[in-house]
Structure formats: C-alpha cells, structure tokens
Amino acid sequence: MGDVCKVLIVDDEMLIRQGIINYIDWEQEGFQIVAEASNGKEALQLMEEFSPHIVITDIVMPIMDGIDLVREGKKAFPDIEFIVLSSFENFDYVRATFQNGVADYILKPKLNGEELLGSLNKIVNRMPGLCQTAALAEPTRSVEDMLEHFILGYDSAVDKASLAAAFANSQFALVGIHRKQLEAAKAKRQLEQLLPEGTSVFLAASSETDAKFLLNFSPYQFEEIKKAIAAEAANRSSASWLVCEPFGAIDDLKKVHDESLKKIEKYLFYLPDQTLFFYDELPAEGAKQANFDLNHFIELFKDHLFNTAFDYLENHIEYLGGRYSNDSFEFKSFLGNIIFNIIVLLDSLKYDIHELERNKYSYFSNINEAEYAKEAVAEFHGFMAEVRKIMLLHAGSEEQANNLDKILSYIEQHYTEPLRLSEIANHFHFNTSYLSSYFSTHHKEGFSEYLNRIRIKKSMELLENSPVTISNISGMVGYSDHSYYCKVFKRITGMSPGAYRKEYHAHHENEAKGLAHLKK
Image (cartoon, rainbow, N blue to C red; front, top):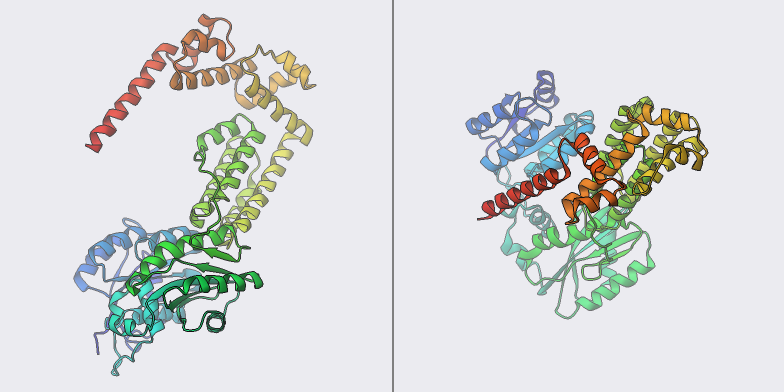
C-alpha cells in the first residue's frame, strides 16, 4: 500500500480554489490537498516544499501563468503530473501545455466532482505504485494495459518481461483504424478474422473514433497482412486504415507510434475520404512554396487591392491543404490569425465590423473544433463571405467596388508606363473629379503621390536585390527623368537611392557576420 496521493491546487481566484476543494471528499477518495497557490511562481515554491504528486492549475494567472508553470515544473520535478483547467477560448494554450507534458485537461464549464475525480483517477491508474491507497495489491495488468502505458511513455508501469513473454512471433506492426463511430472490440475481431493465420492482434489504445492495434506475426507475413488490409479498406469506405512499418523489438513500439503513426495520422486531417495509408505509399504532397507574407497581404489590403490580396490568400490556403504532413493545429492557427488580421484591417479602414466582432469567436471555435481541413476551410469561407458583404455595403455597389479594385490593380500592373489620372478615369468610365477625391479620401494622398509611392517601393526592391545601375532603375519603374526620380526617392525615404542601397547592403553584411560569429 502506497502513500496518499498529494494534490496542489493553483488558481488566482480564491472562489475557484474553494470550489475545487468542495467538489469531492478528498480523503475518502484517497487524496490529500497539501497546499494552494494563486500563481505559477508561488506554486513552484510549494512544489519544492510539499512534493505533490498531482498539480491542478489554471492557465491564465498573473506573475507566472499555467503554461510556464507546466514547463518549469516538469523541468524541476519530472515525476509530478499536471491537470490543466481552461475556458474554451484558451484551448489553444492548453494544446501548448501538452507539448510540455501535461497529463490531462478539464474545460472549466465542465468542471464538477465527477469530471475532476475521473481525471485524477485516470492519472493514478497510469502510474501504479505512486498513489495507491487500496489495501489489496494491484491486480496483474493485461498485455493491452501495458501496451497503452508503454505508448503513453510510462515505462515504469510496464512489466517488460511479462510483456515480452506475451508475443509468440518475432515481428510487429502498428495499425490504426479511424471511423466516426468505432467500437474497439468489434474492430479487433474484424482484424483477427481478416489477417493471416498465426497473427496475434492486441488493442494498444482506443477512443470513440480511433483504435490502435499491435500486430504480432512471423517473418515474411507482412506482405500478406498488407494485402488483407488493402482489400478490407477497398470494401469498407467508412473507415481509414493506417499501417506503420514493421519492427522486430517491442522496445521500438513507442518510437514507431510517435514518429510513424502520428505522422500518418496528420494525413487524415487533410484526406478524410482516403481509406488506406501505408507508411511507404503516402500521398504525394504539393511542392514546397514560400511562406505566406503577411506584411505583403496587409499592404495589398491597405492599398485596397482586395481581389489581389484575397487571391494571394486563397492560393496559400489551397497550398496548405496539400501539405499533408503539417500539423492540423498549424493549419487552423493560420486561418484564425488571418481572421484576426482582416478584422483589424477592416476596422482601420473604417468599415463597419460590428457583425464580424460579434461572430468572430464562433468562427474561431468552429475552426478549432473542425475534425478535417475541409470543415475548417468551409468555416473560413463563411467568414470571407461576410467580409465581402460588408465591403460591398461599404462601397455602395458591387460594380463600383470591383471597378475601384480594378483601377488599383491596373496601377500596380502598369506603374512602369506613363500614367495620368484622366486617362485612367476614361479607361474605367469614372468621373475624373470623383476618382481624384477617392484617392484623397481613401489613401490620404493624391493620385500622383500614390503612384510615386508604388514606383519608389518597387525601386527599393530593385536596389536591394539587383546590381542594376540607379539610372537604369529609374527608367524601369516609370521615371523618364533620372534626377526627378532621385528627388522623389529622397522625399519619400529620407535618403538618396545610392545611400539607401549602400546602407541596406552594409546592414545585411553586418547581420551575416554576426550569424557567422554565433555559429563559431
């Protein structure tokens, strides 16, 4: 019989701490609350003093938050387990704590005695010998229990001699099955029936939608196993099958699970309709492209090049949808970040964003909860439809909004040519006075200044990235008079083109030297 399981409660709100204390009869359930803390820094001191087995912590706290507490606590006290409490809008932060070793989380709206006790007991059951209070000895663990503990990283909970003795054959493979509603026991029976004779099937872990099975088989049977699973996957479109590479030592199970199965599982987020994933026949990803340039997107938006900005965005989302090995959290975070930035940009441009502000948390949460990429993208497209509706109302009419966008795109494409406001107005059937007023109102500058800014910005890129002479650059960006170009460049940037080029290259040379020094 082991010691009573000691618990530390961490939350900056005293009422929350008191509520947790009163949810269950701690002593009767085999636990003891040894201390309370109001922030992470205070909790670290109490952890050193009281050596708790489990810490229950909030995420958002002053001085030191829950994320830092988990990270620092795991470094200093690796045997202590953490349960994180979070409201839904902080769920992204909860995910971050899992990377640092958090054992479980509970959403605050669902926090009650039954939920809390279930989480505590789940941790205790995974760590036999740590907090046992029962007088009877713990029953012998099944092979499948030991496999689950092994996958979770609790090597100390596994009797490796007993585990090794359970396998009659020398080869192993990890197989995952994903289905919207899955009964693990039924899936196991199904596997046992379709696999070659002599193959043993063990359930290693399961949830409502996933089951992970360890296959144990003789050498040279793996190809027969693959054919059987491929045939089953072709006949049953309701499930996806994930097959990892075979391995010869049970000690490699966790490595295969973490490095191979988890990699294949990422593909499911992007390809939910595909029924079969073999470790060596994974779908080809799209070619690697440049990262999304948020600053470029913002500049296009501020210049009212909305169609160009949205095309750039849509192309990148399509690209991300073909990068199957990327984490789903990364994909969802990108969409959420774009939603946030678009709302901020619309507000800065004086659009009416009250409806967007009211609905943004719904968009965030629905994207966060999306099981598949196409669901997250559909939610994002719903947001974009609302954005376009607001922009259309703001512009007055769809035709006018499109024409103004086309004018700005036209200038962006033809800035190297002689451009006059009157000619552009006639080309797009606009009143010249109205177009002049539009530029002054929306850009805080006239047409000539807007055109100069576009040209100077392009010339700065050439000065930075090409060896072309300054006199040639002036002509390349639309200036027939070199001296006038230099005068405009200095007025906008505060320095001459030559000085800008020299300063830019000197700065980058210093950066390169600094990096070289750091590498040494």
